Image (cartoon, rainbow, N blue to C red; front, side):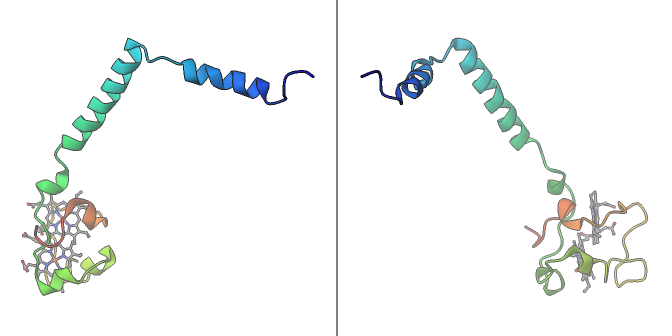
Length: 98
Ligand code: HEC
Ligand code: HEC
């Protein structure tokens, strides 16, 4: 009777069991974590732009397309000429004035 068929699989698992972290592995993991933390702390442009005021006109809005009903050149409150010509309002403006 030879070795059971699963034997080869067990042996290749041993590679992972015997794997030891080296100093360089810890440094790589530490650097990766540091990069992630720095990226999270960078100020988002949203923090500097005026938020949409938390009034009844704005609170109910969920779709950016609805914003231009009023914030269009012919709307109730047109955007200034230097305002970015972009439709993704929520990327730059927080809702609820928070
Ligand atoms: C019903 C019309 C209407 C709609 C729809 C509307 N707004 Fe407004 N918005 C106004 C008016 C009027 C003002 C200025 C008066 C005020 O502060 O309420 C204003 C002000 C703002 C301001 C603040 C400007 C400042 O000087 O601080 C932002 C930002 C803004 N709106 C973003 C949005 C976004 C984003 C949407 C879509 C989710 C949106 N608005 C939809 C009417 C509207
Ligand atoms: C690329 C980022 C960006 C996007 C996208 C954006 N805005 Fe703005 N918005 C700003 C900045 C920055 C200001 C302040 C500029 C200033 O002080 O003139 C501003 C100001 C405003 C104001 C008030 C002052 C003004 O210029 O009239 C309103 C209202 C406004 N945004 C609405 C909107 C709406 C509605 C949308 C989507 C159609 C939108 N924004 C998309 C960056 C953005």
